[in-house]
Image (cartoon, rainbow, N blue to C red; front, side, top):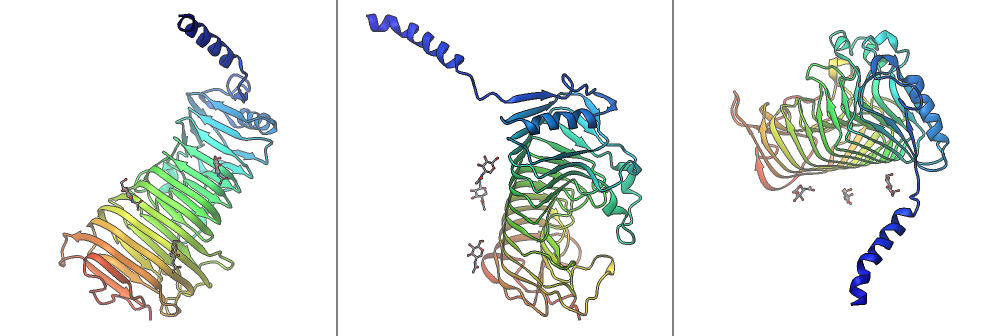
Length: 405
Ligand SMILES: *[C@@H]1O[C@H](CO)[C@@H](O)[C@H](O)[C@H]1NC(C)=O
Ligand SMILES: *[C@@H]1O[C@H](CO)[C@@H](O)[C@H](O)[C@H]1NC(C)=O
Ligand SMILES: *[C@@H]1O[C@H](CO)[C@@H](O)[C@H](O)[C@H]1NC(C)=O
């Protein structure tokens, strides 16, 4: 009896005890309450955000910067580490960039430099307001495109998570990841129309251990592009479209490029994209390599060039096709790739005449094409893929359309 009576008392005591234990208190810095930010779309968020960042970055315990709901204007922000402890940036508001590109002196809008243990959360939006510049681009002829600001840049950021955030209508790439380690995007959204030129969703380069998970990308260029030095990258449960697909490269254009290795693209769905999964390298390139790249469980809905290795990548004819690519490609697999193609050439593996591809595998391919010219085709040049399972179209059945000579 005594024991029974004591249970509620005991649990009361326990409750009191546990609630009175101080939690590892994190510093919370609200840009509106503390630093005078205004969600009026006029007042520049730049100074309040920078002041909040300085306070958070100097904190020796984990801290959180809060940008509450509302719409803000932000001219630009460079949020620099190293910081004394972990930082979370909780963005619940909509942050808009100046629409006029002349407001930017360099291709940056929001930049994170040298931060360890960064979290970005809150369901908010970074809106680059790029619509006015897309029509004016002539990326082939001048440097206009490269000079436009990128919505979010992460330079040398490690142990980071970016979740539940949207990047919208960037003037250039939406996200650029450079020199990062252990970096995860989860439930991330990229949103821009099909006609937004050069607006790659997430571009990754010279980084190790980047994951892009459960992410929805609609944009006018590659949904995810993996540049030189991308290592151990996982792209999983990503939907892409409109967009130009998921790609490795282009590689070989510049001197001193780092090798690419360990790329896993799994369980992704591409819809109405210009390309599916591809690896592209420039002809007459600098030497380099890309190995261990695996594409598996990919669903295609009306996708152009669904499976593509293109070692004669030469947009705007700005290269010399007579000299083969010097990028060595090896250990590449395309498995369980199925759906519909919008181009007759569904599988196109064009490897370098100088350095044929090694250990390429096609397994369980089922791609249909219902346009003029007959069923889907598959072309292989300077590569002899290992095949298994279903092969629709029959592997390497069509003659090469272009020789590169
Ligand atoms: C990777 O980063 C996450 C997020 O900061 C962290 O929880 C995890 O421990 C890190 N992993 C490694 C291996 O450091
Ligand atoms: C894709 O997702 C399905 C269902 O969750 C799972 O069974 C399969 O293993 C996944 N494929 C890969 C390559 O991870
Ligand atoms: C191919 O890549 C996979 C994944 O990185 C790796 O486990 C495997 O050892 C590689 N195969 C060869 C022959 O290098």
